[in-house]
Image 1 (spheres, rainbow, N blue to C red):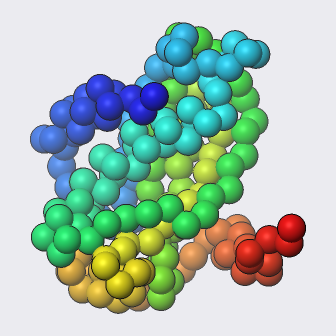
Image 2: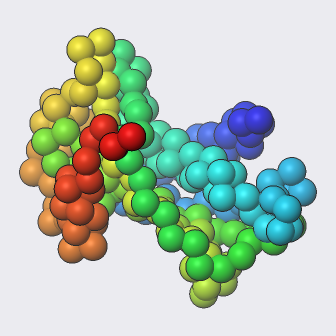
Length: 176
């Protein structure tokens, strides 16, 4: 089940947080509860993706994107992701999450998020996200204009660009 109460909590604790620039980093804290674990007594990989929602939505709010989406009657969808898991998050452990926009191209916004226990990065994800309307994907230059930011993306980190390039080679639809 989706952690609606946790999302409301994250939105409540950030309601008075200062705005962030588009590429600013939102920091949040989360705890792994017994209902978040898998059979190996660690944070379930699917729940990890849900945890990332708990950082990404407040980030969108703090950068002004949520207000723009509401005003324009736009939506937002995920169009791809790549995750690295490196250290276990066990029951009752607290993690710090860092969430930020790393850049955009003509169609997509790219976000990076990571979870940390102290100096140890437990996992990291890069997302490709799209703003949508009734006609499909809204071009990023329109989103940038609505946000009042430069439509030119900051330079994409090399590793994100390599992921974009590699994913473009992936056949779609996949072979059966």
